[in-house]
Length: 319
Length: 232
Ligand SMILES: Nc1ncnc2c1ncn2[C@@H]1O[C@H](COP(=O)(O)OP(=O)(O)OP(=O)(O)O)[C@@H](O)[C@H]1O
Ligand SMILES: [Mg+2]
Image (tube, rainbow over all chains, first blue to last red; front, side, top):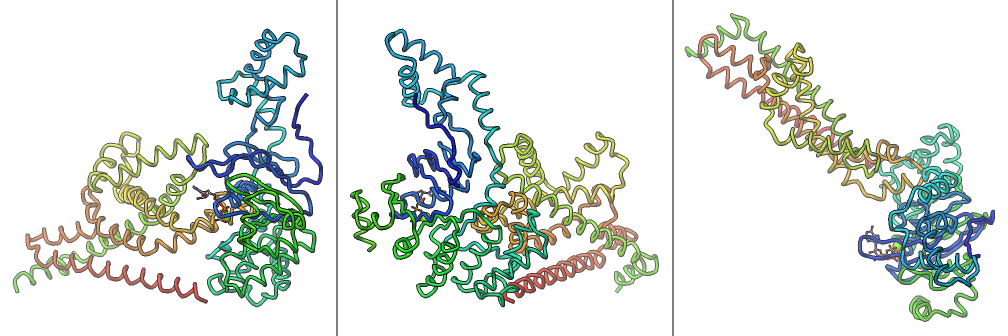
């Protein structure tokens, strides 16, 4: 019997499961799956427009997948995608009818073969789009209720760093760092400020606590954006081209801070064009092209033995 | 100099200045209260209209507020005063409310419609990255709005809100439609005492001009101070 059941290796923090994302008619992600394990540093590279940012933003639901599921630890963040759960498909009327039909056609199939065939048929022709009965809806709902976690709760555990920093312009640096922990009642104001000052000292910007973001350099802004995410004590950090908007002389200080985080054991997913960083820090590199994951490997293998033609072409341009 | 004498008679000797001061107070109180109601109401409406929530209550409110905004922006304030004061309020049992209070309410509702459009623009002018950063930290959409987006939007719209206040100040001159003694009505009475309107109306116009001048300067000051605090 085939079943891609959802038993979770405790180590998986983020699971992207067969995710599709359309923006209107534009199909940006075309079925991507990847697991981010605890402690991993995954670097995502690929040509512009290949869907790297979209995949990263799907992980914390800044974009909602059109199909497919996102899991964080053992919690479901998206609606259920019934095609990923055969137990749910089996409760649909479509399934029950097809089993009868197929049995008539091929009386000598075993139950398991029948099951496999019908599920494949349903998936192929997207038959669940048809109006389904109560039982199916209930099965779907039950699964959802058992596994769903409010996305705001999950996002506390997933730090995100943006290309354009996105520091809060109306707040000074200290308030940028303490707003979320205090608003979400994770810390008192005093605790949050103490933590914030500790983080500022760590990056040597303690004298900037009271200034507004508009007075900072790009490198300073990005390092503060990173510690703003750290102030939430996340389990995983997502970086979307953190150095692409920086002047060249400021790239180093940001990468150094990211390396430090990596050495401390932080789980990281990094979209970047910095191949040096990928080589040095990544435990795994993913190559995306045209909305799909085309290759995935350890950095040594990835750079020494690229297999995908598009990846070879891409590497020849960037290295 | 006869008309000057006539004005002095009705303004000073017959105590017309008291009416004028009361009228000035009514005009200012109405405009200020309406602006405060308008800002609170308008911000709330803008927030709801911009919400992407699928909650049925939110969806219903959206339809309601769209109609609301269309009504208050699409009809003259004088018509709104007449219609609400003489038709709607009596029908819902509020017919005995003092005209001054009704005036404040109607101007507040009217201003809410305009401010909602202003705030909508202001909110949309805040970089999308600000919302994303807030949400990515786990803040709810309401928290993100209140703590990050609205403070920045407010700063963006202060000049426009200033203009809205100037319009309110001037538009309150139709309060007499529902019998409220505002600045305009007071000067009509002063002139009406002896049928000599030249000087009363000249002074009335000057009074509005000065009010508007003062308000404009206050707004400019606030703007300048906000811009300075950005650069500290
Ligand atoms: N909100 C959106 N609405 C419409 N189209 C979008 C949206 N976001 C992304 N796209 C489109 O999706 C495609 C993939 O975008 P994405 O940002 O994921 O690519 P990327 O791999 O991160 O590229 P880059 O290296 O340029 O950042 C692009 O063609 C882009 O125009
Ligand atoms: Mg991108």
